Image 1: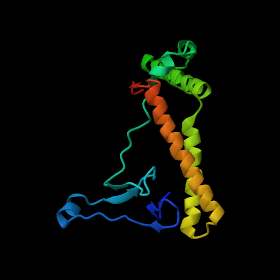
Image 2: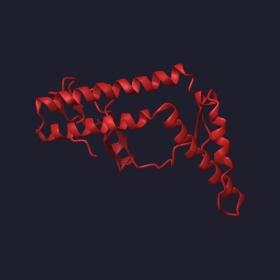
Image 3: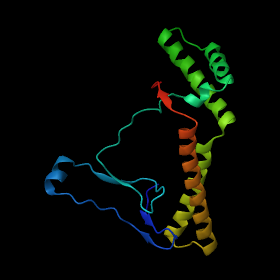
Image 4: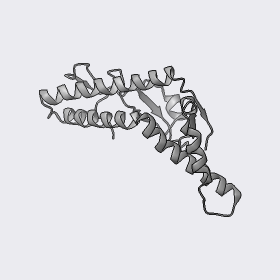
Length: 179
């Protein structure tokens, strides 16, 4: 969604659009296909702005193994069960790829059951805050909705901090396999 506003005061009463970059003619000649992208606002009252020349697709997210998974007895069981599932195809590289996909899918399900899905909760809170911000942009937000927006952002930020804290305290370093 394109953002109409890029700054909201902490109390949710003032809205601004800050989307300017100071560049010169030489810069414009070098970078002809520029656009401004407003990223999601997190703890700041401003959306970070990115000057973009083109869209780069880095493909799917890499496959990760978190250290805290290795402390759980059933993690190895989940991997083994996913690995032995039969997959179609005769090319060994495709069979290997599909087995890794099975492992990734099963680990994701297991992780959600074992540790909960903070990402979904955070995404839901972001969506709710975004809808309320959209109403505010239209000028149709009530005092009760503004209070709901403030509370939603508070929960969202708290959950993101907990996620980071959990990753640090539980030793959830990850190894990217790039699969």
